[in-house]
Image 1 (cartoon, helix red, strand yellow):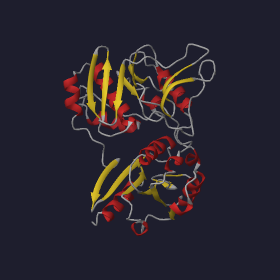
Image 2: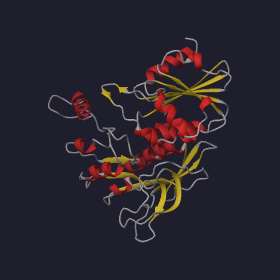
Image 3: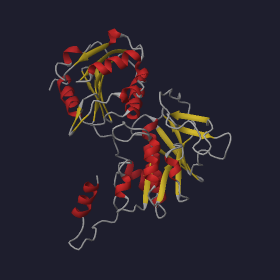
Image 4: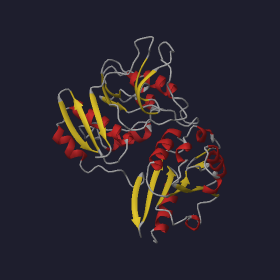
Length: 359
């Protein structure tokens, strides 16, 4: 990551070391951010949330928060999620907070919760409202700890696929490019930064007009009345996968789900850790309209076991040790085929999509 940032800066500077740009935007991994911030002091820093990752990479979110707190952000304007009790603790009295007000969406009953007790006095936190995992509004009954007040407040309407953002006496509505609350938070974070940066609503709307999800992350195509949806989930990450499974579970119509998420080998690295499967909410798939689940790859039997423990009937699950001959296993009587791949298996998913399109 450090080498990548350094190479971008070198590529865009003069022989004397002067940067040939007025603005630099860098996506920095939360776990390794402290290594970057030793040398690069941001004027603005967005942190949308902090969750647990795979044990091999990050461990618990509190550990990541501790590493981030070691940095000096005294000259940085922090753009923080008021609905995340973990990342909002980065506040150093120079923060701008955003968040989404209570919605009529059903709160997710997730297996894990990265913060349920007050970090000050360890009392059980009171939930004012919850969106998913620990994202929501909370307060401690025994001390003053509570969710921060929001400077930018989002009102979500997924039926109209819009997000209305209020800041002081101003209100402006933006179209969502994906119909879920998770991307609404991304939009709200971006608008909060742009407004804090001094851009006008007109400039922001113009800049966001053509924003779409990359096809590697989300694509929906129709072929002979068959709807094919491909989704990307972060490899071995229970939070990313669970949120994707929740989205899948809410899609209407009879569905075939194809899993390409459990490779034992990931690019340069090799791991046999399957613990993340048991932090992932596969219970969301226990729906009558999910007619078929095809588990692919070397860890297909581990995934098969996890699905059975989630209460999914054995006759719904098919295991396939390779990524070949998947098309032959699909029940084409179902209305939707959903392909869920990970960071290092999306090329296999693309190959399958081409087969399904007859290419």
